[in-house]
Length: 515
Image (cartoon, rainbow, N blue to C red; front, side, top):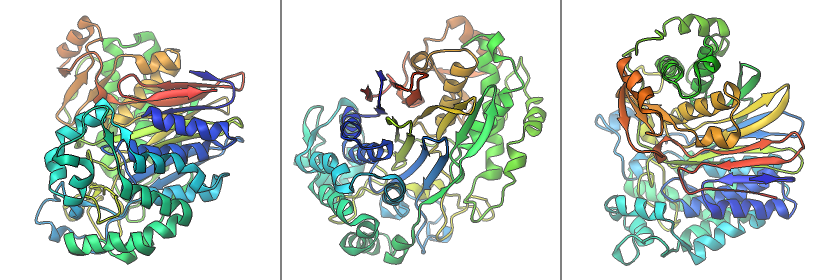
């Protein structure tokens, strides 16, 4: 999609429409992103919600980039010994303080040009009046109905008439509408304090032994700062700083600098092999930086140095797969989107409740479905990501931007847990090494290396290429021509004319609209 003034690409058509409405009314990219984010919390409840987290990069018209990291903190009663060896997947005992509302507040305070009640109006309407669920949402509701049924408050919303809504049936969330309205008029204080905060704290007191207190809610704060940066060929890539694992993408790209991917050919067995091996090395190094920077010191100048990357790249055998194990991969669900405005401002935004439907429990009468991000912590003493009160766990959530010749070019990202940085790597190499159009780079066949050492591949990759990869020692999982689990890239790119290009990945149910 092309637009001369503005562009939005999101994971759901209703969110894209909300963003475009704001842009057409004179709002900027951050205004539009806030509108889209709130709508996504309503229409994609299995992927995101006001009870989850948000990570954002904002590129200002003058090229300055700000990173917003709002991963929720563990409660003041969060200790490894209270979990008996394992954090449960479901129930409020697996929830961190919601981070997304504070990201909304910080973004609006710094960049907003329209009142929040205007920006949230579409989301409030969709929550109160309902929306026809998509095929994807209907499938997720059916798959996780048994989990949702364990929470009376969740079942009342997501299993009306004691069953999950089917595609095209209307799903209403009136309590969520009230919570969104309260935030739109009262901001951060209305969510983390006041009646909503009290209801959240009461729910934790009753169902999770006070894991999160009223004081914990009020103490949460979105972290705003500079993104991480690294060069790749003729572009500069910015990424989300810790607690995001966005640094892994930069490490992958720095490793690839030692190889002439262009001469190997796009989606050739040689280039795919090198990228898989680079991914393994970057993920093996991830544990050194895997923790809340308030509790862990990392030498980023060394970790992201070209010299170190060249040294590490020598470990890549161009003919054989390295069986070194990678870090754990977890089944998660997320949604990402991007927006560009008439002034050249751009936003890349990713948000999640971690596992599908988070902890599958709604806090009291708030309509807020909580995350289960406590599962991201280690319970092993001494681990850099070990659970502790007030600590933030490592996140797979990340977004990236590209600059060329000092000028902003593109803002993008993808859901997909540990596949995120792998998919982002494939998009960037498609654009930079092979000169693909943005549409072609996103449509191209994709692969993803798993923690079990298998490589999930789309079968559109040539059979001879896949056979060659297997001869080198890669264990392949063929899962069809288009695999939703390998991402849903939403991207906006600045055109030389000053207009915008937008692309929404065909693998899921998104849409790009510009004008």
